[in-house]
Length: 379
Image (cartoon, rainbow, N blue to C red):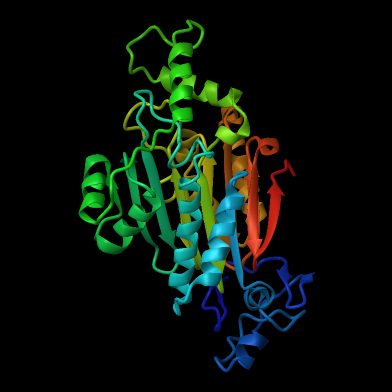
């Protein structure tokens, strides 16, 4: 059954089985009408109230939490701190635009951090020694998205993705076209390859000659991707993966994703990160999700869209993430050899995460400025 909160203007195929009340407790709900919406003067919709609390789950969560930011991996802390800081310092009166600013800044902060070797400045290069960046941003109100792929020498790439969304009629620009667009809008070319990233690339160049690691076929053989994945698997978590950032405020959702992609990838390779539905998705009527890991595996399952649609069907964010990962593992068991992970925020502010290798995946959230670390689990 489709039901609508007249204050929140949110829709869900069926009600969640549990909702947070204004006092922070969790209770089962049966939708009838929303006392909170009626009291606010907007008029009650007779289909949306919780019998146990008299308040619909969305309004209840609005009372409990005003803002929520979430981001992937250990460097997610950098993101949520930057996003929270931007939110608090912003003078923007439009809360939706303020949220967009905060999420984009959260992603940009990691792009600027050279210690993060899978994103932006200092990211590990392709097999030719060039750093290529992919990035995307999406807002859930009007389903607007902007993305760039295969961008060289431009930082932060997430700013460029936002410019594509706001200044062009297109969804994505790639390669030379994206670079030309950036230069036309005042971006200055930058060297993104750091001394440490160059050293690791040179190390890989030596290793790839080992007969057990690389095919003897032509030099552009996709085996290079498998060599890259094998190298990644031997590295500490500091060398892993995309930064994905989610933002929520009063039912409005924004998601951003930025990466330098799989280390030692074939030039021109694009993963899931800038692809709506694969690496990220946001819809205010259901929720938002962002993915990280081996993009080829994530893309074939349209993982972000799958998670969002599962939340639309009434599942919690945690259930949606877990069910989607379990589907991947059931449908193609070999996926277990690769790290594929997702974090999500439902339209009511509920958070969840899951991964094919949960012991290796973590994320950070900032709920009204309170930072919390989350470890994925098999449950």
